[in-house]
Amino acid sequence: MIDIHTHLLPGVDDGSSSIPQTIEQLTIMSQAGVKTVYLTPHFMRNLYHNAHDVITPVFNDLKQEVKGLDIELVLGCEFFIDNHAAETIQQEELTLGDSNYVLFESMLQQLPADIFEQTYQLQKAGYKLIMAHPEWYTDIIRKSELVEDFLVRDIYLQINAGSLMGMYGRNVQHTAFNLLEKGFVHFIASDNHGDQQECVQQIAYQLVSENFSDKIAEELFINNPARIATDDKIELINHWRLPAKPKSIWSIIKTFFTGYE
Ligand SMILES: [Fe+2]
Image (cartoon, rainbow, N blue to C red; front, side, top):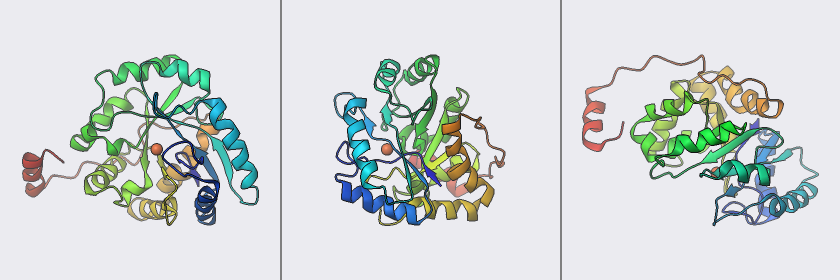
């Protein structure tokens, strides 16, 4: 497995705070079959200014420390998108490894009105975009079809393994499964902040295998993530898209009163 979203670069954001903590997490992941881990610290202007010259020495130190583990580390970033994203990403080399892929996040409470202007500017500069955990956004939880506005703009979607497991509540879990059923998901990653007791990638792989198929699990945890480094094509609309299930009376009533699907 390849995990494209983690906060395990020690001491630089709200993830792991020390090298031993990171080694503990990487050991759990390695033993469960994770072969490559992208370290994607937050870059949020005025909060986590994780510029290239700040994170590279930390990354090099960590690589020395984990030499004994059978795991490859790649430097990346989870970029909080704004109107100056393209210049900053170019200047600070904040893509996933040497690829042109950018993992981005935005305001969870409400997507900004100019979100597609922001993504367009990045695409115009030559970057390919992956939206981190769409299932966490209030707007998308309320109306999951909103992600189609991202897909038609060639933006890939990465959901969190923990979302499928119910780690962030039932609404997030429901949304994650809903996106998966529709074939809208391209990657599943751990978003490990240094505090996972077990390898969520392994558990979620099992869940996807059982609820969908081995082939789909392989695509989301292994093949698509591998295509980032080699720049191969990733299908935007996946072949397993299922017809929508008819809604029960109960779910129609629930949506009417709560506003949630
Ligand atoms: Fe993250």
